[in-house]
Image (cartoon, rainbow, N blue to C red; front, side):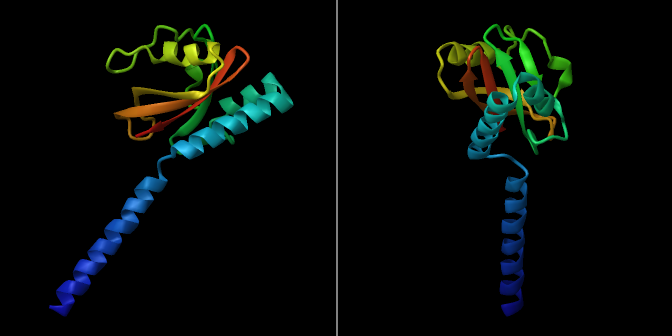
Length: 152
């Protein structure tokens, strides 16, 4: 019986460690807010060109696991994107998620209202390649919204 108990304890310990490992692969809401604020700080201190170059660098400081910064203006045009360079300068104002929700209009509404906050939608996770529930934190700076989302 002692061997069975030890095996069970080892299995539980392994499951706990594996669970922590999986959790560590995903960004948290706190990390999303911090990454957003870091991008805003760079934009304010170094200017648009340097900030956009750093944000657009897939190997740079604004991409971390499944977290990445993107910048959208109040018209829904993408000005910088840490995960998908094909979206740069694209009008995403009519973009809808898997359920048909126009989440970009919610993001731009927050920017226009000069309000930081979260917007919920469903999006393809670049790591798992699956559609997942996501929430994105957006922080307005003038006519721009700096955003980072987390998969739930």
